[in-house]
Length: 164
Image 1 (cartoon, rainbow, N blue to C red):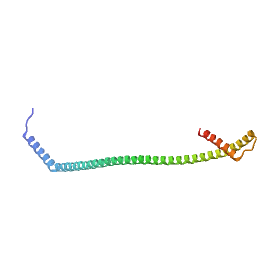
Image 2: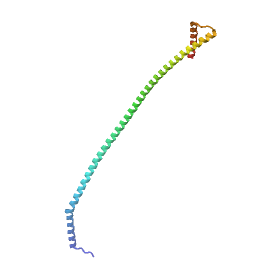
Image 3: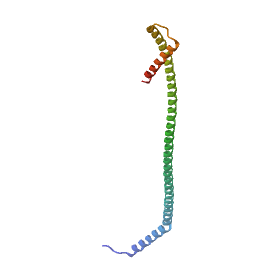
Image 4: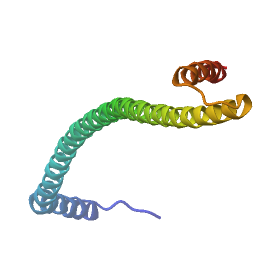
């Protein structure tokens, strides 16, 4: 059976005391120093991470604001370019209209001159044909007054045809 021996208990307590003293005197300060350094490093890392997080947040906000400003600037530039394009298109349209009006005026003037030339030559030819026809039909030479009267009557008829 089990017997309780004082001698064993004494030496066990002495051994336990020596082990505790060695641990507290030699091992504990080293472990405490390591744990303290580790704690300080973790605190420093957390502070550094918090600082970097704040810096990143500040940078993010700054970049978001810059992006918003850039988008606004891009929108403004696009709007200005559209307005400028519309103005230039309107100005070019006016220039083209002016050129068209000028070209039309020139062509109408050319047509009017060509028409006048045609009628002038036509009147001369018609007049000569009328004189010749009247001279043949009437079998006489027409006097200048009679030629002028016939020519005026035919020109009046020609103008009516022209107006028609």
